[in-house]
Image (tube, rainbow, N blue to C red; front, side):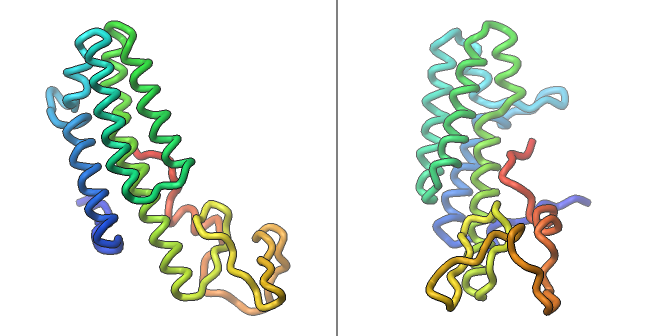
Amino acid sequence: MWRSFNPDIILSERDRQVLRSVKRRATYLDKGCSCCCFTFGFDFVVGLIPVIGDAIGLILGLELIKVASKADLPKHIYLQMLSNVIFDFVIGLAPVVGDLLDAVIKCNWRNAMLLEDYLMLRRRDEIRAEKGLVNHHNDGLLSPEPTATGGKSKPPHHMALPEASSSSQPPPAEQNKKYGSLLPRF
């Protein structure tokens, strides 16, 4: 049986509360009902009302982002969430096809998964920093730690010379596979 990883184990209490709230709202908005192996939510139902329904969906999506922003999101995550909601609004303006695409795209659920991925990566980098480990790839959230020589940073991993000692950490490519990326899950 497939079980997804439970982020409650590793995240701080504040981040857990924000993530739970965002996931609960996203489920209500995008996956609240199921019919013939197809899930849809309040956003789809309200979106059936021309223009006004899409405006209500936009407001609800922006409220979800407002709740997610309590987790101290960086600008690029915030802008990606905002672009998901705006794209959903613009697509929903088209009469019938837009409403169907609105149900398929599920921008609020994408934003919840984007938040979860970001919080997990941020916590991973915090744990690495606490242990004194240097982040060896560019997709991490922390910059490389300063060295003892004048407080300068180490060069990026693609410019660094190979070290003689063996390391217990997998190469950066394997780390990316293990931890995933910030791309939303469907």
